[in-house]
Image 1: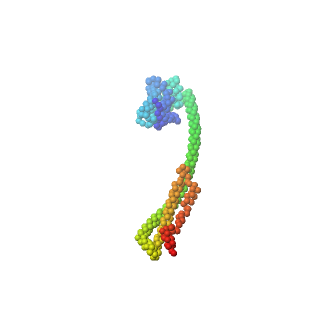
Image 2: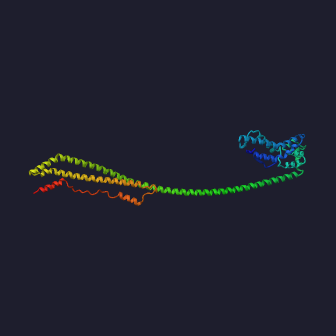
Image 3: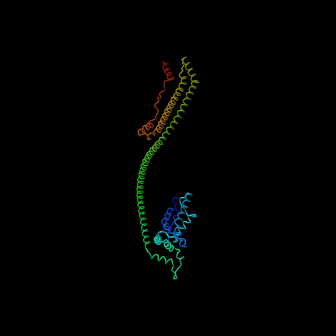
Length: 406
């Protein structure tokens, strides 16, 4: 079964030791049992006739196997439930494991790494009962169980003192074993420190490479952003300039449109008046002029003076023709100005449409602007119209009158 972590880790400080153990997983606890408790398994060979000593020896010999059995049950339960950690719960196996560890911590069961255990291990080579007796006396509850001397001194303390005053062979082995264990731990610590330094240097190098690449990307983004910002500023200035020029030219376009509407209104008005005057003149001529001319013709044929009679038609006809010429000139002037205003509005709108180049996105050049401004602000006077009266039937009549004089 795979190892499972304890949450939280177990802390155990064996009796008589100042440094404890921190057990974070079932694998570490199994390793602890193998290292510290498997050494007592040979004590299970003591005969059961030794009373409490035999019971203690067999219990001590079975301690490691009991812990390993409960650990296997815990790992199997964790595998079946899919749990990644073993937390504090009411599981019977976990309670029994904690009970075993508490008995080690209270001093009821010794571990290998203690002074008394070192002497017991040495005695196990020759006398299992002596070794078990030594461990039995080393128990924390031995003081109360073994009684006291008449002076009140506990037998257990007396026996411990005698053991301590005995051979130091076991103690030497304990010191040697502890030295080897310390050396092993130091070697492992040096190896872990070297790995840590290697990992730290690799991480520093990785971080340095990361920041170099990050700074490079930041610089590239800054350059790209600056370039884009410059392009946007240029485009904004171009758009702003186009807007300002378009807004400035929209007002003249409005003025010329107003002028176009005004000249069109005048042209329509003068055209209507001109048409009405012609119609009224024709009606008056037909109604009055034909009769007067007929009478004047008869008088001229009979030799009677016909000029006074003829003047009745000539004077109104002359005035009517002169008025029609004025109306015709005004009509022609406004028609010409109307067409010119329409032309300038068309030029303005064309110029506004060509201010933006879709491909280059550039405005028209200054010389193009000068060209359109020159066309807009040129003199708009109408062409000169000849005011001299044209040859008409009135001129023919006057010539006839002159030729009739003697």
